[in-house]
Length: 113
Image 1 (cartoon, rainbow, N blue to C red):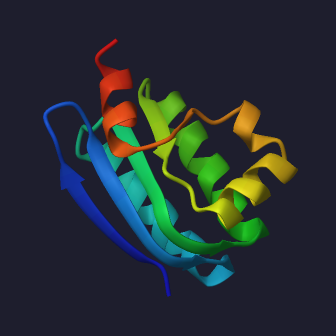
Image 2: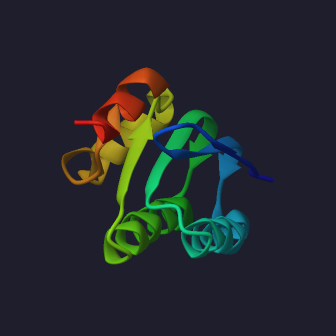
């Protein structure tokens, strides 16, 4: 199952995702994003470096998170996707919609600009 760890930095709240992101994980992920937004966080960064696999439900959950953060008046970044995850995101053209960054430093720096 997908492991989700949340940590805070000066500029953002980071959700570190680890494992395959499939249908069974989508409700837990959506709940964690909602809890994070409800706690007042408005700048979220999603670390995709340890996501080993992404199915259509995982894609839907990522789009839902993007929409939820934007709807709450926040900003979100997705960073360091594995090659496999990046291929999937490009296949469904989400690389043109999501704010993808190469690494954590670039994602966090983008919040300050």
